[in-house]
Length: 408
Image 1 (cartoon, rainbow, N blue to C red):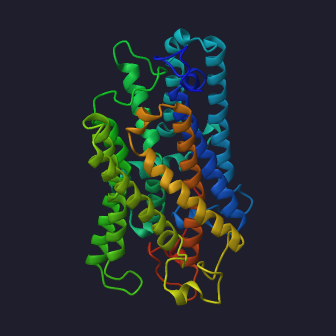
Image 2 (cartoon, helix red, strand yellow):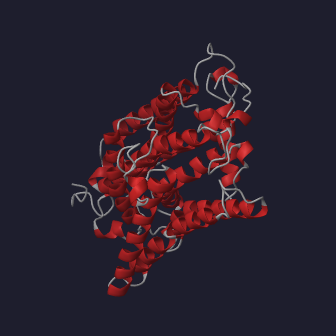
């Protein structure tokens, strides 16, 4: 159990073996592997992800596909991670005092991980360059809620910003680890203190990814209103509805923070928190199924029972048989509800089991990884319908002219 009294209150048993900084790093490296698997499987299905996100394509079939470059980067990051963790285990041997003293080692790996993405490395390293440069430019743009035009890769910005919403808890844990490290007498490998730095910082960090997506939706709405009205885009109401979806995350964080820090015994706040979680979970689930994946499960009876496709799905299914889609819909509902709970900072005080928090973070990363397959499939179908027209993200594949930059 995490709550081993022999090592409390400084450390829980799980953190003796797998401290918070390593957990953060592990989930980040896992995201790199996940993106490689996304690219690989969709490539095998003939879905050109780089064209959808306006990333330069390969000039010929003799050049390796993009997923191999991602795998290469993931392998390097995983190797360094494994070496660092083994050294940490070798020198600490689950001794609480040594675990606290060696907190600099996992933080060193976190800085190395950051350097791999933030610093342009020479070509002699054999690691992809253009992909990491593209990621840096996208992060700079979306950090302030910006979003590219369709011709410049808007769909890629949307995917990345949505991924950040799934990493909200991980970003909060990263802040907690750094805060504990720089706090006088603190240690990054101690029992996580999610109140570090005051009562406001962690809730604010949890809310930032949703705020980014909300602003992107408002920007898209403004673009639609300024442009000519088209049947494919309408008057922009869908972007406002999407913005409303992201705004439902804020009450979850707010009421949870109030419970943790100001009114832990308040029944009224608890009920408001439960209501906020319910609205956020089911609104997000509806949007995944009906809007992001274009499935007909929540459409009218005629569309839902259309004999041209399986019940509640759509005509074109590229990823697998209907049973796969039904299974993913059910899984998405369960994990959406779980993740809404874990957006709540006060729950770590109730259970205080670090391993359970880590597992829920892993499950959310898995949910987002699966979501990407179906979201990209949907975008591909929208852009390859006959006759070709503007999809919800206004990306036309026949406008794309890729240019090969380097090995990735």
